[in-house]
Image 1 (cartoon, one colour):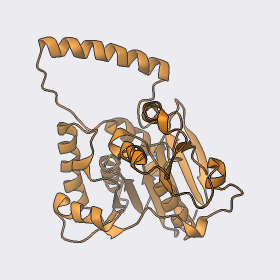
Image 2: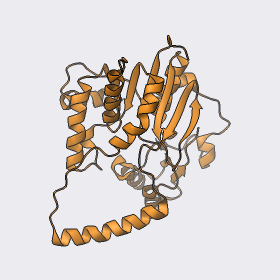
Image 3: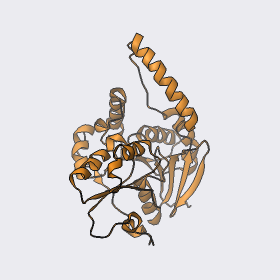
Image 4: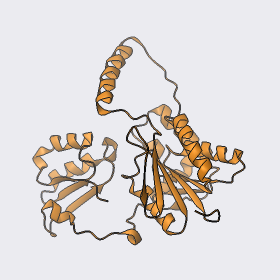
Length: 294
């Protein structure tokens, strides 16, 4: 790294490896001559590092990591006390941004050492963290600009309660007004973001498309892995699996389309996916699951 080389720090609150958008951004910028560091959240109790092209990925404990056994125990206890509380009390909770202080504490030394020209906040969860780091850097006399990459439309995120949705929206509106650029995944998303963020300049589009320049040849073939020929109609979903993603709608549609197959490329141990496979076991010959590929 030389001081004349532009530097960008990407922040995302996931394990990075499953987020192809983040990986493609990092690969593209690294290939274009930028020094790139991606800061993600480790899914383990320890930090680790790896590379994607010319970019370095550093995963830190930005979020509290719990073992599955401990998580199950906490969940059982939480359900018990929640039922008791609902029976006796009406609780009005106040809430803050989850993991904000923890993430800023973990990332501040990295930001001060790396001295990025640009901090690229991936998704609404990373935006408040990036905004705090910008303040830290500027307090040290360093110039760093913010790019907000809006992966989601926050008012439409089903798993956020009303308080968190309102809080994240408030932060989005405030911090995106200071951003050097706002990125969107599609024109349809931009149509939603413009009134939501109260902006007049249309966001730049960075579509979730395959990275042609970085593609690698593969001996594998999806249809061969599934055991179906090229004439069979096939629907493919690749990405995170959760109830709000609408995957069940596609599975149910198979009942109306007897010749069509569906493959979900995701983590096979995902609980929602396991539930769908059990619920629609009568479609197992046409409802397939394949793990992620590099």
